[in-house]
Length: 197
Length: 182
Image 1 (cartoon, chains in turn orange, yellow):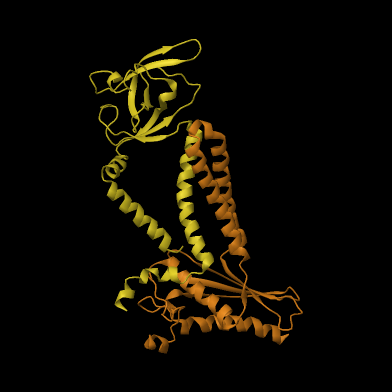
Image 2 (spheres, each protein chain N blue to C red):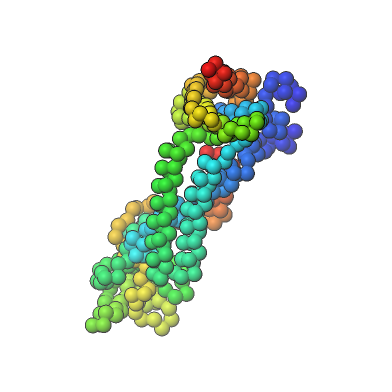
């Protein structure tokens, strides 16, 4: 463990994040989580779960409809349960449609909404959002950081696109010492803009 | 440390927060639900309580072989006619039977009695019916064959023949979905 720490590799339980480097989803998750940590852990911004909760709610209702249909059909076998089944099946597929629309147009790859509390507690919070995308057979990871000023509602944006190979070593261990400074740089570029004005 | 290594594949899960963990279970639930809802949707559309069945015996050869997948419909307004292939349930038997209609009696009040026989069997099905039952009724019908896909159902037959194999596959898939983060 000590050697890992020396390399600056980090994870929740002090263990470096090691993933299967051929697994696109795992790559993206590791990078997303690590970027999230820069803002939440290192800067103490407060995570806002609204977006995720919306998705969880849609999924929960959809699964509830399916389970209800299952139970109802068990107690009132088929021809009798038909009207309820029609209701549940249509609701389920409508909800799946809503979920698709929600993830493509509302979430748009956003995996973190963080609030930066105003120190004096007077102004509204500044909002930071992180979104990312990584195509299945592509090595270029796009990450985008957006800053919305609480007071002026002004929005600023910065993004980088880099090969995932620049953040992972050959064994699939995330090199936080290479990755986190990138995120930090993005964050600073947005804050210094503010001061420049 | 070597003991821990075996659980490395769980690291993804261990890094999750409560919401992600819950979503993981929901994701699993949605895969199951989607399959379930497609099945129930087919039930509603076809009117049959089991719209897809697998032929388990050779009693309908050469029309259907073991492992053929049958697509059924069961519309109440369509009358049952001699020569059609029906799938029906018999009291006291778990597995529905796929056989051809041999004789039909219809009354003016709409009630129907019919007799079936497997193409490959030398006698009609009275020996298969419940003791004392001579005719089948409309309520016994699960559906009528509308289409088939040859041999695809052999997988189902294998799984039914080796239940342990089936559960092993299901458990493996389940664990994979739960552990693997999208």
